[in-house]
Amino acid sequence: MKKLILFVLLSNFIGFSQEKMELIYKVTSDESMYNSTDENSKLIKEYILKMEQELEDLTFSLRINGKESLWFLHDKMSYSPTHMGRILGGDSSFFFDYASKNYIEQRIFMDNYFIINKLQKEFNWELVNETKQILGYTCYKAVSKEIIIIKGEEKTFYTIAWYAPALKYKIGPQDFGGLDGLILELTDKKRKYYCTEILSPEKTPIYILEKPTKGKIVTDEQFLKEMNRIGEEKGLPSFKD
Image 1 (cartoon, rainbow, N blue to C red):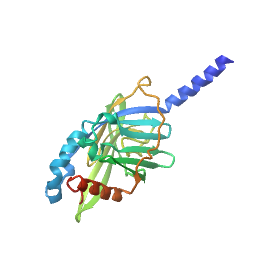
Image 2: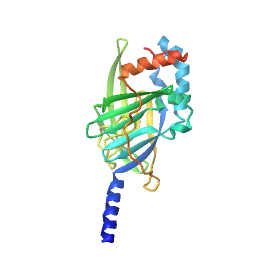
Image 3: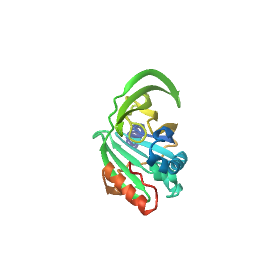
Image 4: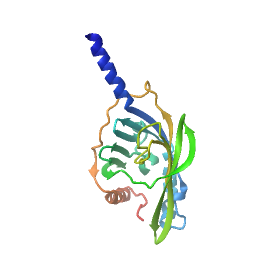
């Protein structure tokens, strides 16, 4: 009887562990997001570039447990609250529920917490007949095109993803996803996200994913207003368009 109970517990543990996974990512920036002819960009460019450089100091984790995932800044407490990479957005956590396709994003700006509820981003992915190896997995290329009107002028931006069909999760770094496999590398108009390690079972910590709840509930537009308000109180340049 004891052997039967042990077998059932072991089977449940194995099944549970197979649904759990942790990946480590790094993030770098792309200076092409700046428009040198924009007077507002000229005023804040030096400040923003400093934050972009320090963004590269940070390491992120993507934890998966069944149909839920959490993207967050790894070892957050080891970075100073004034670390400029964190100020730019490195503090954001993204909890995703695959069943509802809903993201809960927790943002932190100057020690102020905010919660933003949103649906998963929709991308018009075009699958490309290109592959490359990332951490031992065959990854396939997908491209999404987005046209944005900026000051009356059409501008085209591309998001390029490399996803691994062998990893059966339709998610990726931050709030990107929607492909038939986990995204191990992605470049959009602002950032490049790339996986540096997929933790082995013995390195994967025991964890339970929890939805972020701390913070004022706002929309994206309200968050920008709050960020400007807090920034102005601290004597920082305005982020207004």
